Length: 146
Image: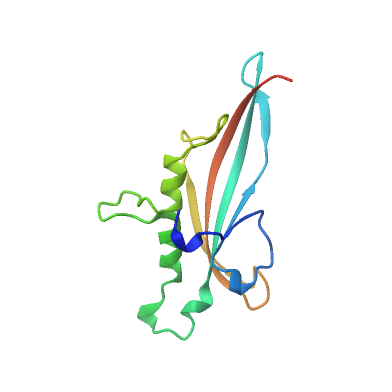
């Protein structure tokens, strides 16, 4: 992934974030669905969320043509090459390329990566203004019925 995010990945999605910790990435699971794949196997589907939080105040007191927080978040999540292919250092590229997470745990590449963007005013604490990007995707796992 992006070099600027090295050692800035955290589990869960906290409400209050210290401005000094931004940018930060929060990875959380929405829920788990466990069902039968066959008479002998369980199939677990786990929708996941990656939230990239970037400090919007970096743009305060900047010239109108020098506001780049939103662009920085786009770059972190889905940086593109000149031919519009995903760049190797974007989170979206990593999720698409390295879809096998463990011996029996996979990212479901048959489902779209969903990317959403927005601004958070005091969402992460008083005086914390953020630009945030969210990637939603599904992870799945098979196992023999217990």
